[in-house]
Length: 446
RNA sequence: GACCCUUUCGUCUAACGGUUAGGACACGGCCCUUUCACGGCUGUAAUACGGGUUCGAUUCCCGUAGGGGUCGCCA
Image (cartoon, rainbow, N blue to C red; front, side, top):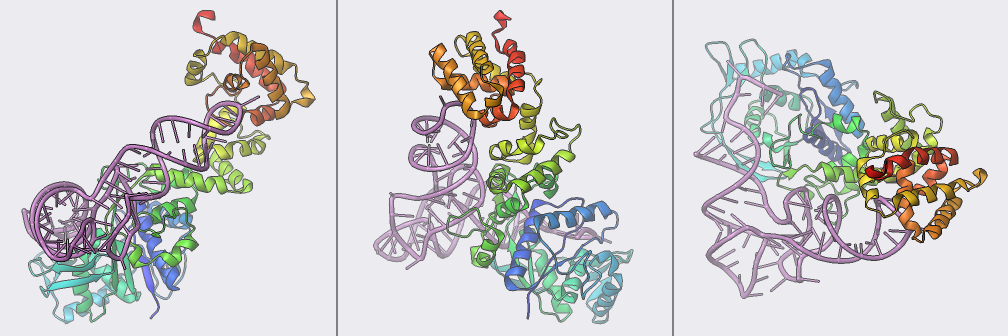
């Protein structure tokens, strides 16, 4: 029998990283096995269900590159894939249970499933054999007085109807599985193979909630993370190739995505490390793709950043690419390159203040830069000018680089200096120097 | 509270019962660099605790402690 798995989120308004990882693992397993990945929207709670919430899930999955074979916006043999539209199917299954005498009705109209009250052993692919004692549990409600059905019931009915063979989901569902198995048996259906994956927690081991930074896939989309980097990082939470490799493409992960390579304990989410993965992927990106990402991000920013409408924008991006861990960091670099009037940063001024003879150095530097003929204004010539200034001042050229950086960019950190100066051009560089020298002098002198 | 899962550096994780317990993020140092970074090298840092089993335990078993999960007419 061919593998069929599903990701069954309820539209709560965003796609949680935990949910995204669950989807990713299901997808990986389906693709590895040459099976089918189904997306089923569990939107039985009409009050919480909105179009925007649906979109957040669909967009998030698409962004991560997790394409589904059956589901919303895609046809399939088990349509519809929204639980809210499957009422007639649930009614029919419900009737089977009633006819078989598995149910009883409460005074208020709610219907419960009469539990066989057995100890169930769940053969979980990740957790091993898990004993679930159902003998003392109250009977589960499967239908509310208003006729709507409860999660456990619809979940099992759909898994039967959609011929799901493997259920890969968060460990928080492990006890629900006892209830689910009871229902499968009552319907005379074989339960699927279960694999409960450990949870993703915050740094402080608390549950990640919408508020936590990075908890929503939306966060990464807005910041223009590279989906491959995020997926790579997510895979490493609860799974490992066991050979010290970390930067792995999805195609490298797939063949190694085996149950025995799964971890059993919860993982704490580390946004820093996720950023590091992003930086690794960003550095390897080709220029056109990088430009594309930056521009997409720039267009979303209000107010717009310096350089956004400047024809020189694309020529500046190669200077920036190797310097950043995330696309939003282009902001500070664009200010450096395009906003000559930006004031000198506090940390730059402080660092500069620690250097001796600063006024003389800055002036000497400026003088030598002015001496470079405009047509010769290239990195090499600029370097020679700095060297000449250094010689006159009897200091090492390196001592002048930082001050020069501050004059040109107003910042203590940033792009490669010489290429940046070449990019700025002589006139602009000198104009900036003239404007910033006063800001760089000690307060007593100004 | 009951039940289930879980426990290796701060974090993610490696280690057929025999390793100086490895890698990565973060943090510090050094080198490279005429600046800022990248990079390279390097340092600090872990087998929760107590019992077994074994010649030998991070690894297997039991207990304790910690963490997480579940105990809905939420999903």
